[in-house]
Length: 279
Image (cartoon, rainbow, N blue to C red):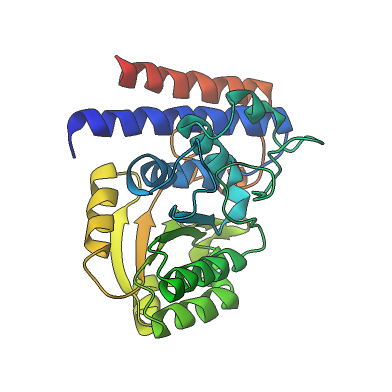
């Protein structure tokens, strides 16, 4: 990847991280940890990979994205803002009555959101349906979804995976945000889904494992995905709370909002990094 393009992606992701903290702090609720871990994946998809148009969010042949781990909505909102789908002023209205930005994505209110999600396991199921529709009607669009590593403990995920493999949905790419922490502790302690790659492969998927914060690896994985006639699962190893020192690899930041002091500390760190990237 050209260094200038990578730098633009890094800047966009950093601005989205700032929005995550601003939104969750203003709401006094939300899920910062898993939002910060998957934001690089979303940034690449919305800025580089997907065929979309912020000026025409309902474009018929657009690629679709489903945030299956819907509680990471602050990450999606931060990326949508940077991509120009709605105004930045909405970020600090997160979870407030009357706001378009609720705790989980709402396709009826938010430009750029293709599926309302939140109940774990249902997002990938909807993505599978979209991919099947595209194949059946020859629409030609691709479908992307992001799941949590804790989410894939849900049985419905594997029903969807079995169907996608059986129907050979090569237009479907699923990322697993593998930050190894969920609400109750580490994924291994709660209910380990490992080996994730072998399970998806058993259902007829092609799998790739990457560093989910490395844009070069994300790009290479998506390019490789286009060369196979199967649905593809990209297992993205990430850091929960990535970019905020006291949130990184800390399970207590799965679903908690920082107070004024900690929000200021997080924003100081994030803005310092942004300034460095923009220099």
